[in-house]
Length: 185
Length: 162
Image (cartoon, rainbow over all chains, first blue to last red; front, side, top):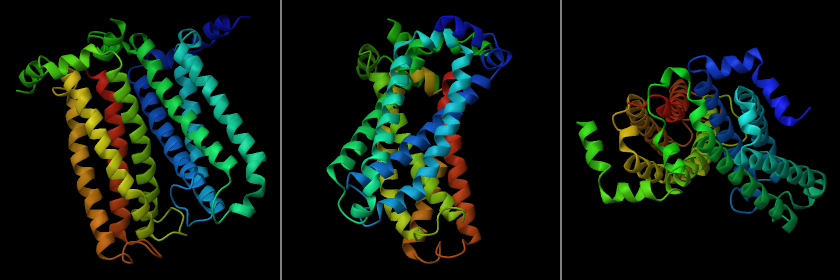
C-alpha cells in the first residue's frame, strides 16, 4: 500500500470528513494548533536560552527544566492531536506538500537532538547545574531553537501552498485569501 | 470609512511594494507567529502564577521581571510585522469584524498588562508571594483569556473575509 493510498484512506474516515466539511471545525482546530505550538516554542526557548547562558543563569538548569518542560510536553501533545486532525482532513494533499514533508523531517531532527542531549550531555548535569553550561549543551540548545523556528516557518508555508483547499464551504463565496494569491502569481 | 481607507492604502507605493515582493507576507506572518510564541508562553507562566496555580518557587515579582520585558519587545515586533501585513492587504483586515475585535482585545490586554506590571512594581510582595489574592487571580485570568482571544481572532481573520 503506497503512502498516497494510505492518505486517501485516512481522508475517507468519518472524522476526517467532519474536520474538512463541518463549518468552523477546521479553523478551530487550526487555532488550537497555533496556540499549542506557540506554547511549545516559547517554553522550549526558555530552557534553550538558559542552556545557552543568555537568561536565568542564576537558576539551576534542573529547576528551570522541571518547571518549564511539562508545559512544553503538554503543548506538544495538544499540537500533535490538533495537527493530526488537520492532516487527515486532506492527507493526500499534505503528504506530497514539500513544506509539510520538511516540517516532519525537522520534527524528527528536533527529537533526535533532544534525545541525544538528554541521554549524553544531560547525564552529568550535576556538574554544571549551577553555573556555566558545557559547549555540547549550548550546541544542543542552539540546534533546538533553530529547528523549532524552522518548524514554525514550514508550518506557515504549508498553509500558503495548500490554503485554497482548506477554506470551509461556508466561506466559499469569499475570494481566496490574498496572501495565497500573492504566492500563486 | 475603513473600506475607503483600505482602498486608498492598497494603492500607496508602500502597499504595492509589499504585495509585489512574494516573500514579505509569509516572512512577516512567520515572525508574527514566533513572537506570539514568546508572548503566549511568557504570559501563561506569569498569569498562571498570578492565578495561584503555577510553580511557587519563584516570587511573582521575579517572574514579572523575567517575562514582561521580552513580552513587550515581542509585542512591538508583532505590531511592526502586523502593520506590514495590514498595509500589504488592507481590505483583508481593516473592514474585517474579526480584525476589529482583535484590535479591541489587544488594547484591553495591553492596559491589563500595564496595570499588572505597575502593581507588582509598586508592591512586589502584595501580588504574589504566598497565597494569591483575588485581584491578582482575576488579573491573571483576564490577561490569559484576552491573549487566547487575540490568537483566536488572528487565526479567524482569514475566514471572515469581507
